[in-house]
Length: 185
Image (cartoon, rainbow, N blue to C red; front, side):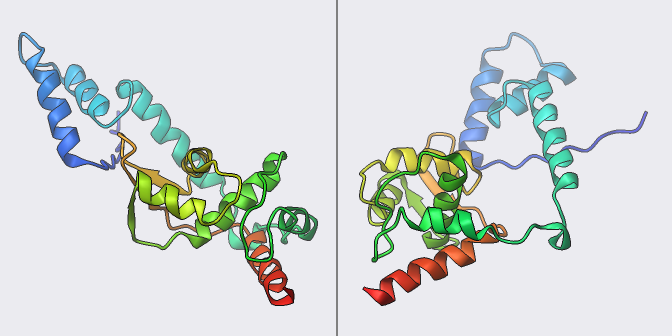
C-alpha cells in the first residue's frame, strides 16, 4: 500500500513545541505511532490525525477543481455596481451589505488595502480596518477576512497577515469604480 504524504504548515513553532511537551508530560509511557500522530496534529490545531487528513484531502480536491485562468468567468459588472454603493467618495465602506456576494467583494477590497508581507497585531489590524470603514465593527471584518481565507492569524489571534493570492476578477473593476467616485468628489 503506497504512503500518502500530507504536508503540514505550522504558524507558530514555539507554541507547537510547547503543546507537544505538555501532551507528552501527561502520558505514562512512550506514545505509539498513532498516538504520536495525534499529538503532532493536535499541537498544530487539529482535533486529531483523522481531522488533519480530512482537511488536507479536502484542500487537495478543491485545488484540483479550481478553474484555470481561461475558465474564469468575466467580471460581473452588476455586482460591482451594487457593491460600490456601499462606499463613499473617500473609498471608505459606509455600511455592511446584507447579501453574501456583495460582502465577499467588500472583503476583497479590504484585502487589497492590507499591505502585503506585513504582520499586524490584533489592535493594529483593527485600527487599519477602522480607517477603511465607518460602521465601527473591525472584529466582524477581521473574522470574515480570516474565514474567507484572505488573512491568516496565529492560533491565539494575536497576529494577522494578508494571504497572497489571485483576487476575484471584480476587484479590479471595484477599485476603478471607487477611484472614479473619488475623482468626481
